[in-house]
Amino acid sequence: MKQRLAAVALGLFAAVVPAGAARADVIRDTEWHLRYLSVAEANGHTRGEGVTVAVIDRGVDRAHADLAGAVLDPVRVTTPGDPGAAPSPSDPPAAGVPEADPDGHGTALAGIIAGQGHGSEHADGVIGIAPGAKVQPIVLDTPVGRAPTGDELAAGIEAAIAQRTAVIVIGYSVAGSERLLQAVRDAQAADAIIVAADGDQPGRDFEPYPAAYDGVITAVPLTRTGEVLVTSASGRKLGLGVPGFQIMTTNSGNRYRVDDGSASPGILGAAVALVRAAYPGVKAPEIVRRLTLTAVDAGPAGPDADNGLGRLDLIQALTRRLPSPSPSPSVRSTSLAVSPAATPVAAPSTPRSRGPYGWLLGLPLLAVIAGVGVYAGLAEHRIRISARNEVDSVGVQS
Image 1 (cartoon, rainbow, N blue to C red):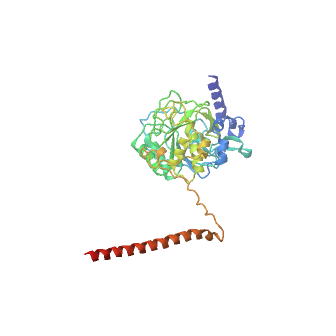
Image 2 (tube, rainbow, N blue to C red):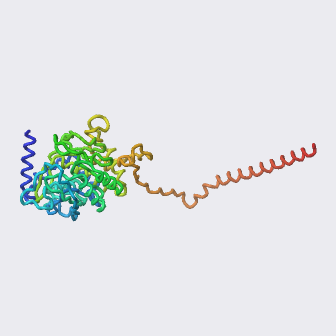
């Protein structure tokens, strides 16, 4: 209880303190997930340069000091909506919050992914896991107070594909639809990796899509001690455990917030962006394979419905040498985790030189070859003479 009250107090502080007034020891040091994932070490390998991550949500507040230069122009998606959809428990926009992101959810994901910090040497505020990546807001016109429908998310995915984004982050779990399933398949065909939420908070019912679709990577929220925070409804076929408890991040109106499970897709999406940046010539199936093979098993041995494939090990995903994939996977090709993958091509080796007189070393071999040829010729000549004598002898007898 004390831990929860502390989190609430910190969240209230962060929500009302503008970015310029926040101290690094309050905001930056609260980003415990950076230490959990060894992000500083990971950024020594790559910061995500060259990778664009789509965030499908109600918008991103690009005016936030910690997001300067990290967010591209938004792409707005107009959808017919679903007037009969059940309202979500998200809070209404606070007074003074810009309409660019009325509930702050998209801004929170953007900060986790590509936050830049601010101040001297960017030491203050929120720093993202992939600060070199770019965030592409895909803005749904879903009203605040109602979760998106499957078709609305599908429209967002279609827009992300059109923008050729490498990673697509979806912070919602919704009911499935034919259009949503087709959009997921189209994204996979376009070499994009979808990272989706699998629940938000303990005890809250949720629909499992698109996380339950083959090939979608599921963000499994974990506590500070690595325990699963939310029980699964999707089966977590490609589930990877990442921090999902008391995550400090950016909020609309140049402010900050603390999120739980809703932050996990941003964390996992940012990790995927780092691996894609580290292996720019590798297709999506091999990136997913790398993430899953380097995960740390948790819970019962092997994959399970709560822990998925285990906890993300970001450093191993970036650095480990993996065995070549099987040329004939036994699972349907629609699953990104087992599809045939491109492997790095080794540079051709340079032949060793034997110097200007190296050809002399071949003379003994040439002599042997010549001797064999002469011997073979003499043997053939003897055989022909013997065969002729036999024929002549047969002719005399007849």
